[in-house]
Image (cartoon, rainbow, N blue to C red):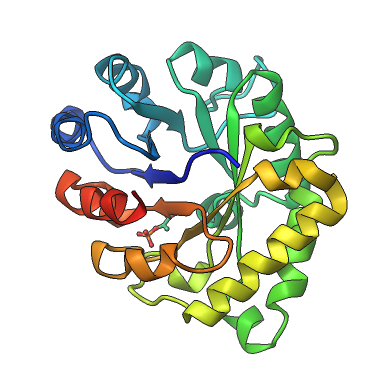
Length: 246
Ligand code: PEP
């Protein structure tokens, strides 16, 4: 198993001034015992990567295209992410699945492109509230896992983030039993498909993680870290989450 991972997804937030948060984060964690990742908007990736190159903070993108280059206006490729200094890419976030119609097949193609470019892919899955209410959460997670991950992966280059759609940005969090059920299910499903490589896949929980709830979430079965949206924007908040993971 790789180190625990605290991953921040800045989404469509931040201009140059936001980079100041990274100085504060670096000062707070000069030698962290967990992996720290920040995925800024694409416009900041290169500068953020330069700013963090002498620190333990890794950087990544929030999406990439499945192709290396071509007529895809507005998109960036996995190679471009790598060239900009990124080492990770978030794929299949529910906001991409909803806003841009990304299917499991598209997410799988992007994941393969990311792995081919030498990036670590953070693949997101999660049920909607209607699916949870209908009792189909594990079916949904199983389908998304099966469809979004390519065959033959190296577990050290793939991270899976369980992000219930209804918990993202809402302040609502599943019970610890619900998180454990989802994470245990993911671990077993991945082991059934990938064998011992599944042991190396970090499983993140995401959805309204804050300094105040991080410790109990990190103590939950098969939770190897968090994917954090809103609380990753301020170094003071993200530091509280990182400290809970250490
Ligand atoms: C996310 O966007 O991946 C996320 C988990 O957001 P938040 O932490 O704001 O709920």
